[in-house]
Image (cartoon, rainbow, N blue to C red; front, side, top):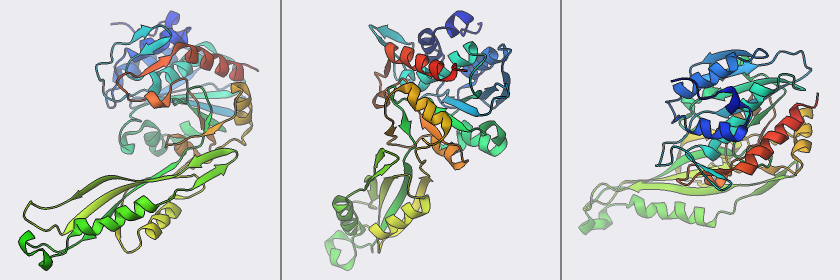
Length: 357
């Protein structure tokens, strides 16, 4: 079977979106789509192309004063009876349409059709964003090919419904444990019930009032939530342990350590174990390419509520923003879809920004 990413497909970002969606690429199974993307990029004479695993990098070297990264992940969550893609009126339905093959289509369309951009460009089409960080293509590049991530500015083509979403929240998950002493329920007074003790943890969560923080005009709303609770040994045993898993989404003015210190204050007197942590990213709106990009989009940026790979670029000192045609509210949904008009608007915006040389 030949490569479905033909020249006729590459010139139309809408057709390209459908074609990419129809190449199934659930996380850890991106070889086929990476092969197709690599083949397209290697045929472009204005690009130098390399590959690491199932992550494909292509770049221009035109001697521009600044370099911009356009990055999008090739993987999707598992298919849920939503492949192949279908079109209904102005909507393309299918797995990954919003998150984020429509964004990938914009980058691949530009890579194939814009040989003389105003900035030097690095295109990153990477693997395994939807699963554990250890498999994430950008994480792997930071370990093995960090020079590929070097830039003055980056755009992650995550779904934002055509709005610039600046920075991202940090995320921290901890397990709050309570301890007790086992006993028979008929003689409950001889034990200490760890599940009952967790009531104080839940009370503190119920009383918690999250911060709202505005940075560079972008308002981040924090959140602290119990997401899982486990405990108990058997139906005839007073439990001696209970664990409440708590998720904190924190504004990027806090470091990971400051966020953890905050949770120690909230749950003073309880045992905490960190199970996952990732830093946020400040808005990154001061870089000259970022200002030009916001102008090209033509609307005020908003805060990114959630964590994205902009955090990885921020950690490297590269300001980064989120921008893509998909609606983030539809990501991973069985009826996931993207508006054709948003794809065309996104392609026009990126071309207007990058072609003004």
